[in-house]
Length: 166
Image (cartoon, rainbow, N blue to C red):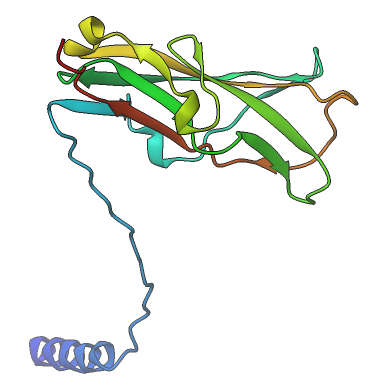
């Protein structure tokens, strides 16, 4: 009889649990994949390319530290050239202030515009996959750095073309 009571209690409990309302939490992911050609690529080392990068403030020197990251580059086509698609500027959230950024790849300063592209890797070095440094260096405003939240989108373009036949 005792066993029968336990079974009936278990059935009653199961029916109560069965009518319970489930809680829900949605989860949405944005997923992208880029598989570069084996003949030409410029890719961030360590997967940092799709993530927001932070420039660190140094209170002792009252300055922003340059941001340094590593790129891996390869081209079996020829030399690799780069340029900025637009000026690299950190804009304040209020829109009142901004901080220009010098952008360097393999110690070569990138300028704005396709007509000002610079060679960042020779054809010889590009033929084998090589790693280089990408550096974003803040240019201290004439009035000094002003407090605030700043952000930028830096658009770089890299090209590699087969040199013309001689």
